[in-house]
Image (tube, rainbow, N blue to C red; front, side):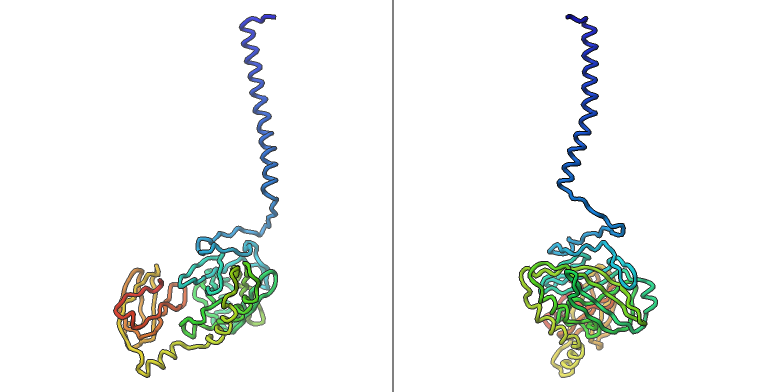
Length: 331
């Protein structure tokens, strides 16, 4: 049968349109079905907790990347639920890294600190004698605990405490109030691998124990525990060592000399420094960022550096080899 040309063209157009419509109706369903199936194979179902909040990663702060227990879920303590507020400072070969998701190995030194602190708890305990309690958990078990009494004197919202201090540090005795070797000894008993450590910090006052600090840090001993077992006794022994008293003893014998050098503020903020040589009029002074000043100091003496919101911490130690040189405060 021969159709007129006009009818043939019309029939072709109608048939083409139908095919196109059918194509667009069917293809999305096929794609959706295929995509959904693929996702089910690749991505397992995830149960989300209403209280869970994603925490930012600080892997760039640590040379080893760092890993830790998921810290997005508040932990219920005697004070109720608190969200993780601890960050960690890890010193590796004289270089310090900070972050909330850190990893350390034997030979690294660890400090915990928080930039946010419960205002009500701080106000209730300010200038009172309280008991600080730190707990270290791993694999759901209590690994070590450390407690001590001290007057609560919070400056702003910043609070810092030693977790694994360098036993050979020349830091002042007044800054060794929280030194304990128990954690180091406990770490030395762990098998080789990566061990996420849950750190809990409490304040006990007036018969009430309040959870105020929470965070995680990872101990990596895949290469062995090294000298970790020996660090504990060394830390405990040096917890009461008074470096300034020792310096004064040697200085009184005339064995150490005074000399001049320059200090350069590379800390990025205005700082205050102090040191023991009170013969100099500049034994305590303030430096703006990138400012350099000349001081008189004693051989083998340490400089202490105070940043905004922080108490004095141990800075560089000097010797007669530094005479006339310029040394950096924060390195």
